[in-house]
Length: 104
Image 1 (cartoon, rainbow, N blue to C red):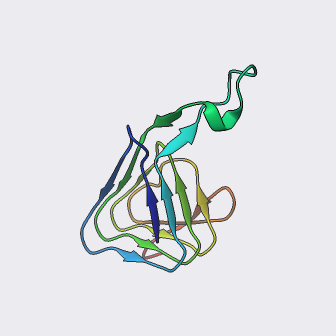
Image 2: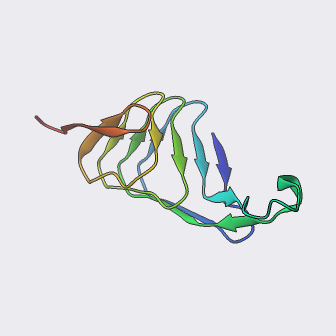
Image 3: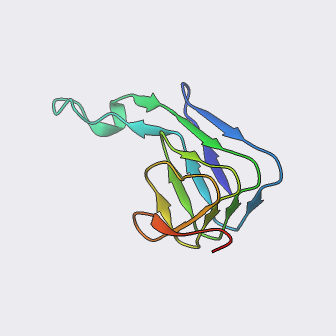
């Protein structure tokens, strides 16, 4: 698992999580607007990721800045989560999309 929140970022992890191998939580992003300055010399913008209780993030999942993964949800292997995941849902794909509600 790789956690990166930059200087101004935050990652909040709930309880009873299952986190598979090679999962990335990245709560920051590079600033790229200034074309007069190399990207490597520009700052990073911190953000926040919230993973609520009882979430399963399967292997090779990537969760980006600004996302909340709701309680009891499942993120399928290889998914890239770019927007919030509702509680008790299953999401997958690139970018991650709703697949079904848990229990259906």
